[in-house]
Length: 284
Image (cartoon, rainbow, N blue to C red; front, side, top):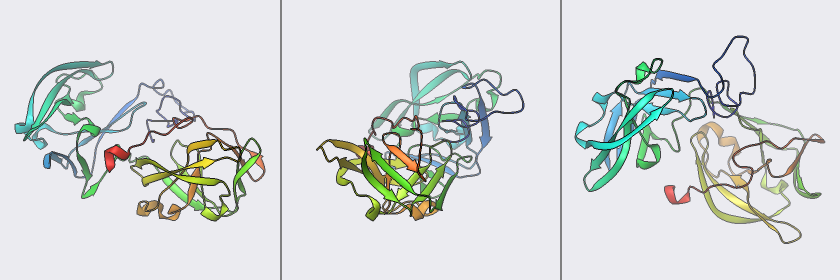
């Protein structure tokens, strides 16, 4: 989430308004040079290494790195017959990547003649994030997608009274929550484990967040025996920037009734309203 995604100012469903005429929702693009050294690793070899990568932000999408061709190993790039067209950027051509015995068909793309407004992308090469083995910003590995420089996460201690329930059955209640405010996402309440009264069961679901780290999950067994899968998540070893949430439990407020200081909150609409897609196979 950030500048272009979710409810960000140039996303598809912006939360606020400008005092000037802005691009229609879903139509904005923003390109800037990243100050970071960015590397891409495939098959144990670095195939792109740049201090001049271009970060593309496009409405409704997470950021994407585009590399100057001179910072990509030409010896691993082979031809591909694949072509696609974007109404904002133009026609893309593709490369198949060969590293030793590893072949990734049409895993990189570029715009030979981008449309007006997308000229900075000309000739620059991008890679499908999930098809590469490793991405590094400076010397630290990055997961899921590039970190958005306009994304912010704040973790604040709060004495507000937080209560989670479902159909009158109280699952947790706390005056000692950590409130996590993250760009374009609903407020998340991280509770001490002793304030969760629900019966919880470990899940094998694992997800990654580029800003917080690796999350593991619990399912909740209700009093009537119903199991609510992956209703709770926790970060045992979060990144240093959000270390205050370590070991605490957080409920999906999309799926429960949440009261804050006695007032019922409206349920947010997010991609996690019904289920969580595990990334365990990709990171274990």
